Image (cartoon, rainbow, N blue to C red):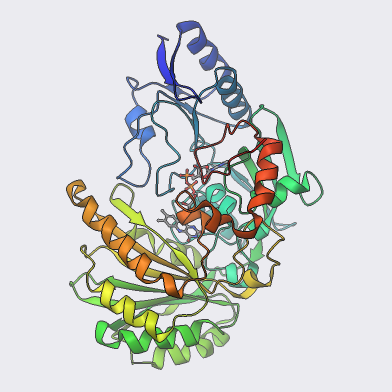
Length: 462
Ligand SMILES: Cc1cc2nc3c(=O)[nH]c(=O)nc-3n(C[C@H](O)[C@H](O)[C@H](O)COP(=O)(O)OP(=O)(O)OC[C@H]3O[C@@H](n4cnc5c(N)ncnc54)[C@H](O)[C@@H]3O)c2cc1C
């Protein structure tokens, strides 16, 4: 292998000579890709087409030993490192310019233990991988709403999804993690071992090491659930949003109800509520009756469907490769002034692909103590997310401006907290809230040189 110029943690460029490159390839069983190698262009891509970064090297890990080898090599050469799971981070933190990208996307095994209702999940598995394997046994755990998102990336920040109101966040269902620290050591963290670290990985992002695998608690779910979407006209949106807030907040834990302002395929701007009920069909029909009667909606697509189909329903709106930008903040209610503001600003969305979403929290999420995990926003009822989606890079400034404006106008109605998985990089304090100082202490202990820095970064002070 010929020499490669690469960026270090100081920001300086150094040359890795042929001997070092051979050494790396010998230590890592998976491919080590340079820009001239076949497969490099595909490997450097992440979900957001706006991200266009070129790492000097990509180490495609095949398992724990490869992760240890890649981390150890990077540390020995003081290299800038990024960690790629499912590649969904909006800012493209999974990929770095000029450094070493440690790519886990070949590590997607999910092993279910149906007797104990647990699953062991590798660091690069996607939500689709997790749901597919667990549903083979009629089991599931909380995961997000788009199947190609990474399980570990989502869980490290909290992880909300359709099961969260019944079973808590993804991180609340975490039993243990196997983590490679900056010094190449493998640590297990659980309630019984390295409990401080276990607290930190449940909401503290990728700050403390690379999770090669982790273990989740599973629950009986489906395989058929009652779910789907009701759609209202924009003229109905004011009343329907008010109804949504009154319906969603006190809903039973079995129901999750996300809401969207979006443009329908025929070009009409509409308001949609997407529901999933995981209890009995009879109970579900009863719970959903007021929603289906309200308005009435223009379209009612609610019915029994496989849970895996419900989980894939959002994929069509967020395909990989388009240009995306979003911001978010938590809310505890949607009052009349918020609704008025939303109506005004949604009407100005410059792209028909752009959406304004409310993701439903509450239920079991809010019954976990604020200090029990590094994710502390337990009071949230909704995460409010204005999201711009477009295809022409020349229009980026217009779309970014729209998202920022909607987000700012909605600030008076927010809790002040933001979700680390959505806004972590831009607002570290608001993302980590009350647990920030505790995270700094953990960072000082487990990663004092800030080896893992391309994330919603907690800066060490040691
Ligand atoms: C379309 C879309 C839908 C989403 N829906 C939801 C949702 O329903 N619920 C929700 O809670 N969030 C949701 N998110 C946010 C998502 O949880 C975060 O973007 C998350 O960080 C994605 O993880 P990833 O592995 O796919 O991304 P990556 O970009 O690969 O990783 C993001 C960061 O996570 C860390 N990381 C990832 N894997 C590992 C690992 N194995 N070990 C250590 N660190 C790691 C790294 O710091 C990395 O920079 C969504 C995002 C998108 C783009």
